[in-house]
Length: 149
Image 1 (tube, one colour):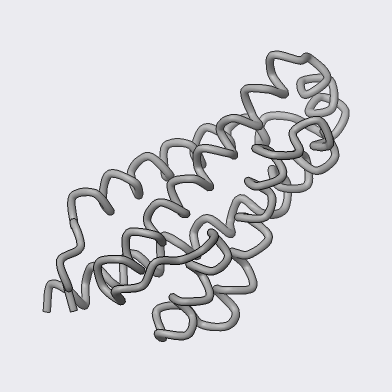
Image 2 (cartoon, one colour):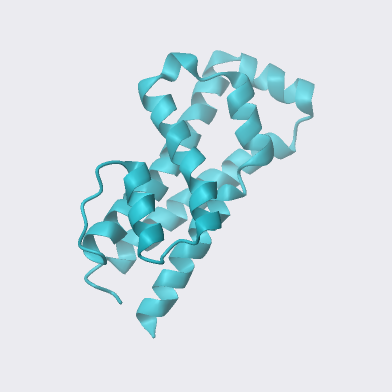
């Protein structure tokens, strides 16, 4: 199953992702709605949280591209296409796919439509979707375990 993928590279991306999600969780957990709104109203805080979300999602995307290329010998045209390839190859369930697609679309919005990203959208992710990152961790964990055996 290894197909030439780099375990070290995937583990580095997973570690980076975990660090980002832990920091984002701490930001969200310690604040009620008014406190979180006030925190994100500060431009530097808002920019920092957006950047942490962007780079956490990018770690998912980079890993997905790596798996598509090294395991499935496919070159995705986009981040969503990478997820489609992984789903079609059985690496993702439909439910996992559905959880990850909005994540990569949000990253695209942050990068290309950054002026349209609102504090409400960031708050929604902090409050309701940080757990979606665990979906990717489960996928990678399973693939790394399969490669070992």
